[in-house]
Length: 457
Image 1 (cartoon, rainbow, N blue to C red):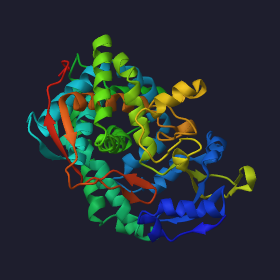
Image 2: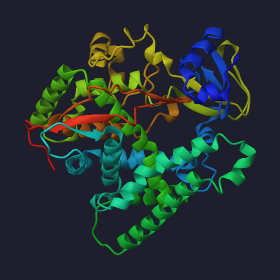
Image 3: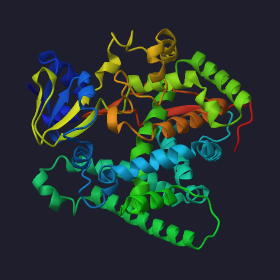
Image 4: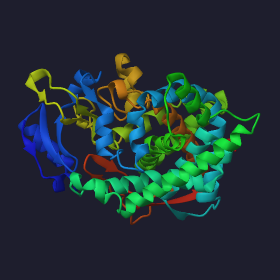
């Protein structure tokens, strides 16, 4: 297995080049020097061999990568240290509550768009990423904690800031030798800012829980879900960390996807018009219910195509190796190693013809031409060909919620607004290591339009 690159080359966003170089020398695997240390990058087909995670740990990789062991960063580690609790809350509580959440998601979206994009019928510029981040944060808080907490401006700000500030701290700390981290983190300004946000979140959660104990009748939400499931499992947990983990897990990637799909649609007015027609037909037939959003095949395809072309991460199934393992073709994974699987199969011309082109109906055509693949063509589905939500045992458990949230957000945007990019602007990707992020500096021109059907607010 060849060793490719220096950490500085990896961090500066050259992973695509490094990947091509690595697999040109060994089609099965190569080693790359990252700011985390050495990582073994496996070819996509190995995902099926490691999908059950025998002898591997997702939590151990994440805890090291995102420095969850540092005070203030607990929400970056919670999904690993409390994986069973998170999984059960999402799959047994959140996903089952989705039909009842549609109206809440819609109401919060309507109010947030009105304040951030306004009702101005003339073209005006807004920050795409910042308004999308606030929108996703506010709508997510409404889904997880109800209208009173989504109306708590400071709580929404903490939810939107924690991931951004915390990840900034992680990136900064990676430039230091690991043996210095126990000292450096005590003084680093970005770490201290992250710690301050978590401390404030704990105070808000403390008062919220005390207030709720006095209420006889109230809506059940994720605070209750965590308490109930933790009690059943015998788990101890920090409520503020649990809530911020939702922010870490959902808001960053959902915001990125929302921005990117709008960027991808900027030159495809025909697709925008088709999406509007599909929405109107589904909502007219089913009402403003989850059933209507489940029928949006073109929107499913558009979201999946955007994620195929620009997944937020160029690798998936990041794992720490707990014992010596040997895979097919003699690939050896030593105990203590970090591994990841390359996601370049999503640009493989043998899997997806014209792989670099945005084809809005790609997954509709794929489902119609191959019934065996039809069940893998929905946005929230996972397969070895499309790993935007991961693959195997630890594929994103909240992807059904993410799909519904994005569809509700897009429904309001498409029906209420026209949008385009400024003439002089061409959004560019921000690549950092394995990550591929949408352009956070991009502006979008928007103007209010008259929606064809009434949307609940």
